[in-house]
Every structure is written in C-alpha cells, then in structure tokens.
Length: 155
Image 1 (cartoon, rainbow, N blue to C red):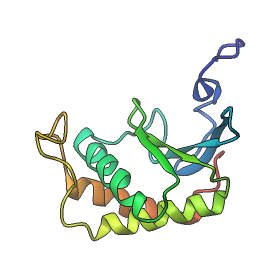
Image 2 (cartoon, rainbow, N blue to C red):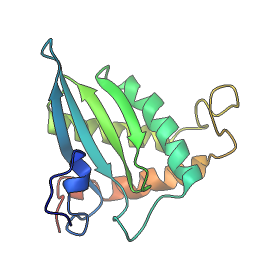
Image 3 (tube, one colour):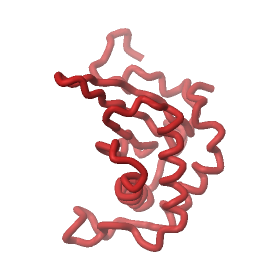
C-alpha cells in the first residue's frame, strides 16, 4: 500500500483487512445547499478471493436499482464496483446506518421473489444478453444468510 493518500476513498482502504460481506459508510459529501450524499460500500465478495460473475452482477444491479426505490426516495444511485466484489449505494439526506441495512434487506428479499430482471431489453440496457435472474437471486440469498455480519467490516 502506498504512503500517499489517494483521491479515491476506496483506494485508501486496506482490502486485505476487510471481511465480506459488509456494509460500510464510505463517505459523505455535502452540497452547497446543505444536502448530504452518503455513499455506502456494500461488499458482497471477499476482495481478491472471489468475485461476482457478470450476468449475476448485472442482474443484481438492475434489480437493486429498481426495487430499492420502492422502499425510499433517498436512493441516488446503485453502482457496481469494477472489481466485481460489491456495489456503491449513494443516498441523499439519509444518515441512518440501520435504515440503510433495512433498505438493503428489504430489497434483497424483493429480489428473491422477482419473476424477471427489469429493463433487460436491448432498448433499455447496453448489454441485454448478459443477465441471470437465478444468479442474482443466489447472490441475494447468500448475502441475506449473513445479514448479522453486515456491520462487521474488519476481520
């Protein structure tokens, strides 16, 4: 690890010390009008040991992005990490950590009963052929099985 502080918060995180799955507040940005953006690191797979396959990750992204908004209007974005180990969840004016855990829990439970992946047509998606509802549901089920560990970031 470099001694130099990096501009990207996650580049300063020692990925060898974390224990997935977890949900971690990764940063807060305050806008000029006082709105606060809270960015959470939802880590699903252990960094450098495992990763999500793309069709499952892609479908999980679509499902979480769509279904989370049924539970709150605070979701700004749910973005997959390039390393394929988790997602960033950005919320506006929502600083309740336990509420975020509940939001993720409710959304994952919605995924378990979903009958299809939303917006996976060529008109709505940039790589519509790369989806797996079953894969997304397996990820959701595995993550929910470790719900009691989500607040434990470090090993």
